[in-house]
Length: 78
Image (cartoon, rainbow, N blue to C red; front, side, top):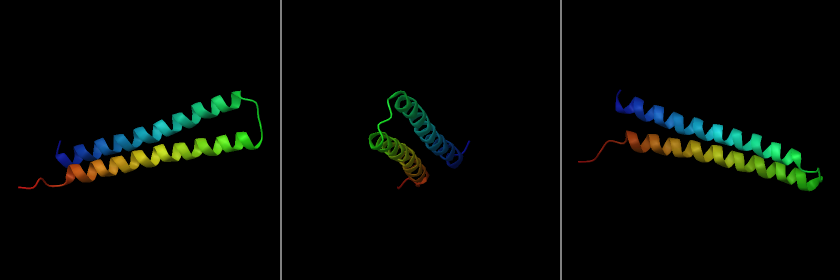
């Protein structure tokens, strides 16, 4: 397996793992939140916070995957 293919597969795994982690976070958070009593604005704010955290997890994993790919494909100097 050449270096480019290996780096691409690792980067794809990192990105997919982060997206899966974000999806699991949302599912567990919503299950927990649904077990709590509904309190109008407080509950809605909680849902927005969960969504923002999940987007942050997903975005971070994609950024890490891209940085890994770019740095691993960079030609060694010297």
